[in-house]
Amino acid sequence: MGRTHALCGAALLLCALLPVPGLSQQADVQSVALAGMMGNKALLVVNGSTPKSVAPGESHQGVKIVSITGDQAVIEQDGKRRTLRVGDAPVNSGGSTASAGRGTRITITESGGGHFMTAGQINGKAVQFMVDTGATSIAMGASDAERAGIKYQDGQPVRMSTANGTTTGYRIKLNSVRVGDVEVFDVDAVVIPQPMPFLLLGNSFLSRFQMKRENNLMTLDKRY
Image (cartoon, rainbow, N blue to C red):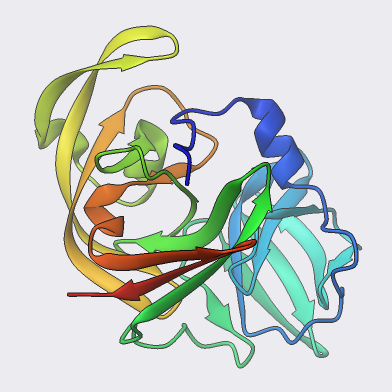
């Protein structure tokens, strides 16, 4: 599998937000999370899929956005309403937080262009990952780190080369990283000051799994 680009532009992010042709909009909803806001639209993550921009009054896979206020959105699903906040852990269709993270297998569907996107959590806060087999560790922007409550400036300063030149990043240790029902602990990461459209899921996480790719599916089986 070729190396995924380390940093992607806004054009890729917009492409990732487009709906997948043929995908049922009434899929069985198991979890819902609010990944962020785009103007007057909410970035809704259903069942760990790629974020979808949804305006008030619109629905995505059976989840309707009722209203948006600041970093919160009121959703309606199966006739029930509840409030989601950016950064909160995904909730399941019963309204509780997702299960305990004791799983051992992650399956990710290709999002287009050879990229594998998935929703996840860092220290219990919802994030959006792109798998990057060429990245040494998980990489995130400073704003994502702050939203997850990470005091990244207490980490080890490191010089980094980015698309915009050389900058100072911070090497840190994440308490926990979760994708789906699989959670790992004490994961190396680096924080850069530039904003990033999503976090890079690098080898500090991936090396703990046996990776297999068949057609448009990537399977990660936990080794330790």
